[in-house]
Amino acid sequence: MSEQQGAPEQLAAGKSQGGAGATYKVVVFEFENFLGKKVELSAECKDVIEKECEKVGSVIVESGPWVAFECQAFGGEQFVLEKGEYPRWSTWTNSQTNNYLLSFRPLRVDSADHKLHLFDKPGYAGRKMEIVDDDIPSLWVHGFQDCVASVKALNGTWVGYMFPGYRGRQYVFELGDYKHWNDWGATAPQIQSVRRVRDMQWHKRGCFTAPAPPPAPTPAPNPTPPPTAGTS
Image (cartoon, rainbow, N blue to C red; front, side, top):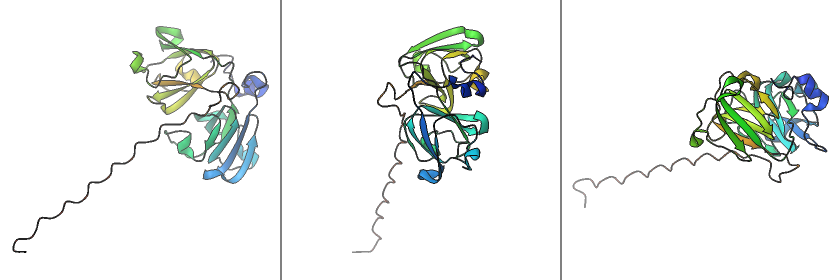
């Protein structure tokens, strides 16, 4: 893992903070729809239980961005939270393993520019794809298969997803080098979509909104039964 991405001890030292003058604030609630115990955070929190909050079921990010985790000590599945409101689990992911969060930390955002290099082999080998100031909902469309085995985040902060359309497990790429997929917390080298993480220091619209699911089809009306024989 890269030095920039390092251990939680490095994050506590401030290496996860954004650019000069960046501020962070997130308000977390114990239950969905901003109900129950309320806690305000301006720095990393390894365990919300230590804040007398049993779990987190909804979130309001006032300034960020942040990354939240399903387990204590920044463990388990991770979820990027940009400025905005998240009333329940389905607003921060469509890959549910549970419906609550237990730890949070600010995401480091080094600049308004974004550049990312993807490689299909570990150690920056094999086929390479460069992404500059763009969001890619499908790597396949650009001729790059779903096997991403190493990454270089040269500018900005990024989040990769296992499936196209920004779906599935999320993987954060802050400034630094990632020689192997284990470095970003994955168990397999699978990423099929990538987008930029926006900091409100530079971007007025920083909250990524997942596309709404298509409406359910309207059932066809029951056909009128034919007239019974012998009726007038």
